[in-house]
Length: 396
Image (cartoon, rainbow, N blue to C red; front, top):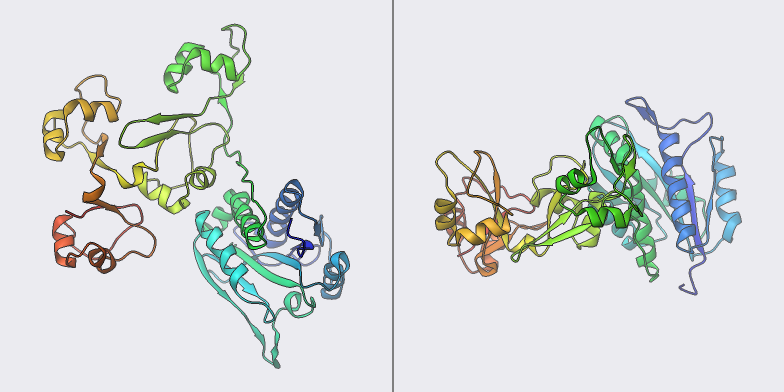
């Protein structure tokens, strides 16, 4: 561990008679505690000295809270204080407030990691006390001595979409903060997969063979991962599903296993949740065991095509300059039958395509490849300048 790093104090905002913000049936004090307790357990697991200002629904006065914060490691500039909150005011997204005595680096790292976990973000900022602009507005920043103190607002409790995102993904958001702190202090970070779905539950009529076929694995794999010495299953029994990465030549498909989340998969392949959702046309964060997702290297070398009336494998293969066998192989097709609306993966040459990333504009992409915006729009049949992360553009 970094010799100069004393540890972390986690402050669950509000508590007891102070409920904090409220909305959509939720109370800020409950979610700040939920996030903080998860964060506390993870820092302990990672070997980081850590304390909580409260671990239950108790009331803390401002003085109580500040005294607790300073009691754990003393008035030390090598202590990080994270005060966890939810916002109110019908806004959208996360924000981080940092103390006037500190710089913005850690605050920016935290907000970037929260964005990578799929949450919308607002800003990193400081707020001054109107009566004395040399002091912080918030007492948890103003009165905590030399510590590096931040307030993290994970979302708006009175905005339904924001509230639901925090409620369903608070562990992923907390992981983003943890990762930012460790990297800021030069300490190796070990990720954690969060379970968002059960393993496969055996239903009436299921056999090991039917389950293996449904989830594209083998009976032997199922027996091995579940330590089964026979083929007998019971209705309601929970069995584990093995992970599988399927190499399709031009891209890779990742098969979702029990315990996977969009955050853990995106982190594994070095992309953001938003990019993973965009490349797979996902509208929410729900995953199903056995589901196949496009992952890098597929991000730079594949496109998708939706089968229309009159399409055949021959016409599609000819359109994209590939063979029928290659098209069947990459989509794991056993025959030539197609359905209207079916999505096909189309391999493309890397030097002819570009995948839109965060911050890209038509102008920046056109400039990068030494073509005009008009040429780029014409090549891709674009009627406006709007781009989405993960969209694949034809360059040549």
